[in-house]
Image (cartoon, rainbow, N blue to C red; front, side, top):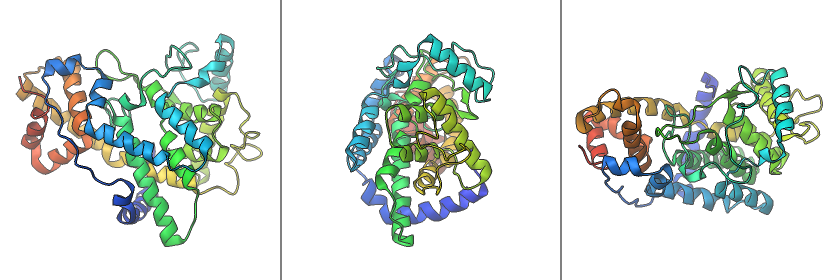
Length: 376
């Protein structure tokens, strides 16, 4: 996901104003229960889903997402999003017998969307097109060293993005007098990472599967767009969803979005122009370009803080693990440390723990972690 000085200026102006207008109205603060203290052995025995379900932050965020989606007026879109939240299955695989899978691989490769990939492994593994590889609730929000990389991270990431997006929506309405499609904003932002459950599957080590690249971005993005196409979401909502990773404000940036949609259309088995996803000729998004995609893009910006916060907190947690849990360097690369970090991060979130670390230092972080996981 790219970040440029222009995006930083727009984010500072738009989100700050929007947050002031809509913060408490969109996601009121609740008195969250304190996380239950567990032993390291108990953490090792817990599944990612069990960790997510015991987290007050994750449950609160999921409740917010569902309540927000429930406000979508279009019943078809509302039902489609709720179905994804309940079962983010890779239904796009239903049409992919071995012949079609091979043809899709060949076309993606010929057009430069796949590089150094193998025909039998260019898609994440899945047992069935009808059943999710893991619940939306338990999925990390990104790769294992990146933002929201803990059980329930996808839920907290999505809730944060929705809050930011709706704050920008309200800013545009109140400051500029623009009436945009709120349904489209909610739907596109909620679904923008819908296939992270498929891509970031938890492994026995306590880490998540490594993501591959597809059409120049993380594969989850293109696969999510393809899934929305297959599930029949309106073209305008799919286009807004595709804008999450960049905006169509320049020729170069728009070309990237066009490439992601084109690759997703190949996977979904549709003509992107005929489906209304691209303009005639297939070189741009439908013209005139709608503004909802820009809101989706701006709303997907908490990574600006949460990526480095995760990196710094994971490193600091390593020192806590050495001092308070007697872990050696081998432990720090295996299930013991992964169980510690997954439980602590799921219960308090990486973001809250980084806030503690940033304001109270290493001792404050250690105190917060040992309150959740009993020291050795």
